[in-house]
Amino acid sequence: MEKWVVTAKKADFQGIGRKYGIDPVIARIIRNRDITGDEAIEEYLNGTLADIPSWKLLKDIDKAVEIISGKIDAGTKMRIIGDYDIDGVTATYILLKGFKRLGANVDTYIPDRVADGYGIHDHLIKKAMEDGIDTIVTCDNGISASSQITYAKELGMTVVVTDHHEVPFTDTEEGRTYILPPADAIINPKQADCTYPNKNICGAVVAMKLVFALYEKYRLPEEEKEDFLEPAAIATVGDIMDLQGENRILVKEGLARLPFTKNKGLKALIRAIGLEDQKITSYDIGFRLGPCINASGRLDTAMRSLALLQSEDEEEAAKLAGDLKALNDSRKALTEKGTEKAYKLIESSNLKNDRVMVVFLPECHESLAGIIAGRIREKYHKPTFVLTRGEKSLKGSGRSTENYSMYEELVKCDSLLVQYGGHPMAAGLSIEEENVEKFRQTLNDNCTLTEEDMIPKIVIDVPMPISYINEELVEQLSILEPFGKGNTKPLFAQKNLRVLKVGIYGKTQNTVKLQLRDPSGAVMDGLYWGEAKEFADFARSHETISVTYYPRINSYMGRESLQIVIQNYC
Image 1 (cartoon, one colour):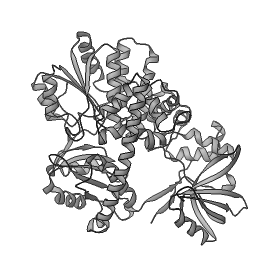
Image 2 (image 1 turned 135 degrees about the vertical axis):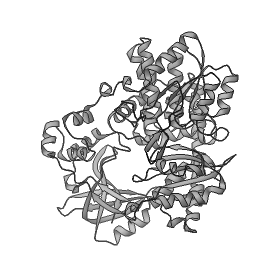
Image 3 (image 1 turned 60 degrees about the vertical axis):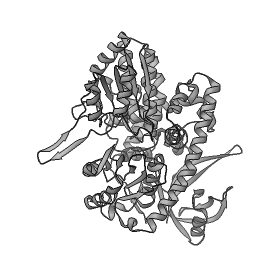
Image 4 (image 1 turned 60 degrees about the horizontal axis):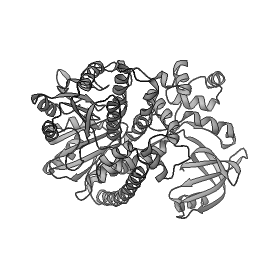
């Protein structure tokens, strides 16, 4: 069951449309994204890199620049410790490229998902000490590593943390206390006393800010900073950051450059997945490019993705890109198998009655837990944790709904967990097997979600008759891109569309094409992808249907026509 709701935020849409030369429908969508006031609307429509906040607003960045520049000048051995996901790999690449450009004596280590686990651990610090490393710089991790960084400091090492995850905290009767690691400098916009206005940048963007600061200290040409926009954009989309303000500008700029990238590895990967000579969208990063970069950290080693980004040889880049695509294809097959197992387990047990789902799939590869959790969340519209059997304990990943802060709920289960970290919408954890049932029970006992909260809401931007659609409106919709979390693709709706023709097409018979007429007499083609037979049967058995849709211009054999892509129906 779905609940369709229309966003009804007020503004002078006609006035905004006249002022900015846009259709009132576009003005309404912008208002629905909470973009209000001339300054915000201007930035949304025409924002550039000049509108991005200065790195100088990040707490401790001056301190980090002094530490790192001193180490660079002295030739001191440094090691970057990143993470094995898309954000961690790109953040590692950014720091490594930036530091090497400045002549640093630096290497890197990305932890192995299975052998090492997430983030910085005592054995990695010990290994760094044995390798003669003086300074560790973390990226996309470190904020939760208080005991490990204490160990590094006891060994006499310098530690700089760059991260974007939630700062650990404890809640007492006196209030909330935040726990920061004893690093020499901590760059993380989520620190309570950090003045950086955008708290939702990814780890790669934090790393990029540090490189920008170092480049300015060493007076490098401004245009060299552009080298980092593409990986920062990929990480922002891949780590599902809100595409608002700075993030939206960065992604827009990165996407514009990707088809012409000078990075041989990215160029090879774009070619391998069939995106060469095409416009690349945020969807392509999220569902085609990004998963290939993530795949090596899931099923092999993330160092392979890092090698791709660093590759200077076209033949090597092509081989690495092919390997990553093959790994991702394998990952997709394993994900389908694991997801089906999860559905069967849920439907055959009491798990389906829980408001927070904890699903234990012992044989599932731990790297797939987060993807499967996301699938379960989409199907049941409930926060979901998927646990798998790791080498020392169970490991798990969670994916949440908008009204449930996953990280804060994990804090309440602190005594049951070996390790945890994350965001409101996603989290990772380790837990002993004997604590799983207590963990599930505690999460559900603490859960305040209502039945209403668990009904999926279809949020409609504009109820709009298909007779209103024209080519100019469809073209104007592109100025709202890139779409993603925090700047969703607009959704339109119309009731009482008469079905004139219905047909099922496609190699796998998964496409429905139909002809629709609205009450004014306007006729337009519609497309539906998904459960084709089910939808076709529904359309044939009803005189009129109501749909949500997105309009587009269809180009075929040199002819263009307007059509709608149907998302939901009733």
